[in-house]
Length: 120
Image (tube, rainbow, N blue to C red; front, side, top):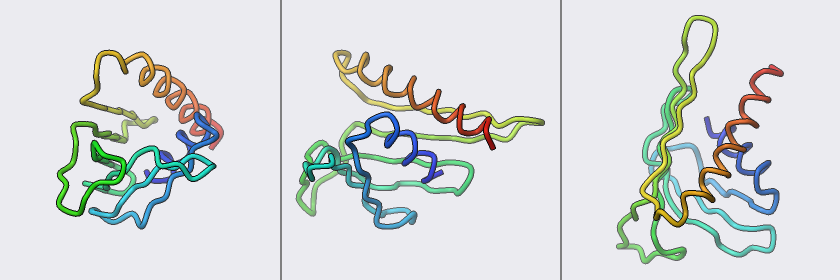
């Protein structure tokens, strides 16, 4: 799952780099652009390899150690079905004004994931 998430973001936004400490639950996720500017900061909440990945982000880019996670999360589920796999992605909580940006980004991500999975 980590590979899928990294691949879709890297191909959608070529200027974004993801830094993941490890695939373990509780590990940090840091998004930076290619110039090193911080874009997002969060943690891996749940990681069930090849099944489910839940990422949760802080509201602040540089949260204090006692900071609580913000409202934005990503839940990515892969469900095997007879001859195919069903991928579902849930994101939230986002402001209405940000919906078009997220729709565009995730539409691209879904297409990239689909293309890559059909090649293999």
